[in-house]
Image (tube, rainbow, N blue to C red; front, side, top):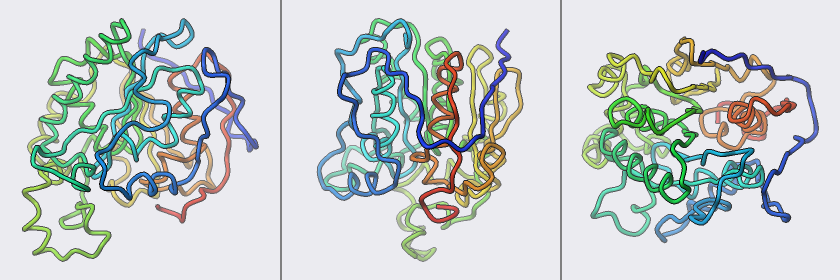
Amino acid sequence: MLRRTMVVTAAVVATLPLALGNASADPLPVPYSLAAMVSASVTTAPPGAPPGANNWNCVPSAAHPRPVVLVHGLSGNGENSWQTFAPLLANEGYCVFALTYGVYPTDRGIAAGIGGRAPIDESSSELKQFADRVRAATSTERVDLLSWSEGTLVSAGYLQFRGGASAVDQSINLAPIWNGTAITEPLDSPLSILGVPGDVYQALDPTCAACADLRTGSDFINRLQASDVYAPNVLYTNIVTTTDIQVQPYTSGMRPAPNATNIVLQDICPVNRAGHLSVSVDPTVTALALHALDPGTPRQIPCAPSQAPPGV
């Protein structure tokens, strides 16, 4: 009953035909680049909501009866990670909500905006509390989850270990990490891109418990694998990219099941080399996610090279 067939068109098109539903008459700008994410990251203010998200008076429409909860990844937050998806979904007529999870109580200034560092199990509890609040505010029984990177594991923890399976209909996952990542420390630290040496990373590691949870063979990953990863009554869509240099191997995010659809970006658009970061802003990926959320609406999938360098 849960098995479904995804039909997409890998044709090159200039723009996506958007069905706005009950969206605003003045659509929000949707930036398809990492620039907006970077701009939203350069601040010492606590993270807020991305454009179009966290309207607690939003009433779901008949066309889109379930709110969409956005779950960011390691070192991101609810504001900077969803500068593309949040306004896009709002324009489509969805009620959209984004949380920031995984910060520590003592975090201040810029540190308060670097989320996803607490143990994943604790972050899953935060997601449960947020999803419960969304359901209460919108008077809905279930939500849909759209998760990216570490957020896919936080969502999995919520679904498998925190009772989320009874409150979620669909789980859409960008660059998921079901089997963990085989990248060895310090490369699994977001600080590695800044050239932080291993001994310094070790000193900082207590402030990023999630960095250890992400590794293949960690206690959390082993527990998730033992649970079979998927909740049987939830529909899953996993979108992965062969150029992902942070989830190694990229196939860590592909797990077959009757209630799961696994999509390799390059199978849909071979010229698109979007990497782990760019999947959150890429037009092909966003169209695939929209199709997964609403497969009954015909939608063309654009195909073009990523605006970011290959693998980014």
